[in-house]
Length: 216
Image (cartoon, rainbow, N blue to C red; front, side, top):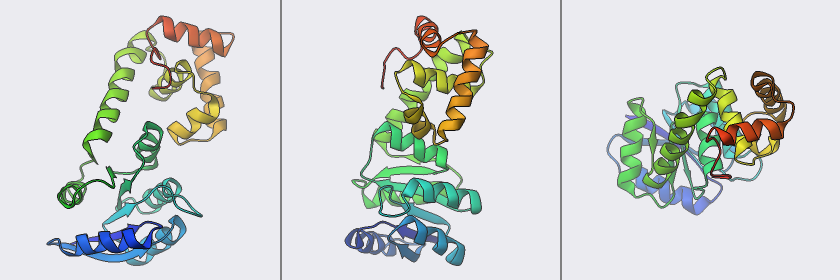
C-alpha cells in the first residue's frame, strides 16, 4: 500500500485529486495540506510514502517545503504536481530533492504510473518536462567539462548560466542555492579561468561554445 499526502492551496483541486487517488488500487490518501508549512508538519505526523506537491502557494512555497521535507525525511518521495512548466521551476524542484515533476494536465494514468515509479526509486518527469531536462543537461555535458575540465560540475553549471546572461540572483534561483554561494562559485570560476572580470570569463565560455543560447 502506497500512502500519499496531497499539497495544494486550491481546495477543489485537492478534493478532485484525492478522489482520483482513492479510486486507484493500492493507494491510500493519508492527508491534505493547503500550504508548505502544513505539509512539513503533516509529513512528520503521518509519514507518507509520497507527497504530491504544488509549487506556488501562499505562505511557505512548494520549493522550500520540498527541500525541507527531503532533508528531514529522505525516505519520503516528493512529486511536484503544478501548472508551471518553465525551466527554472523544473530545475529548482529537482535540486530541492523532488523525485518527479508532473503538470496538472497529466491524466490519472500518468499519476498512477508516476507513483509506482517513485516507489521503485525512479525519477519521473512528464513528457514536456523531460524534454527540457534532457536538453539542458545534454547542452552542458557537451561543452563545459571538455572545454574547462579543471572546473567542478557546479562551477561548470555556474559558468554555463553566466554565459547565458543570468545574474547572480537568477543563478541562485535556478540552482536553488543562496546568492552568497553563487558569488563564491563565480569567484572560483574566475580564479580557475584566470579571468580578471566576469565579462572576460563569459567571453571565454562563449568562445568555447558554452552558453550560446542565452537564457535557454
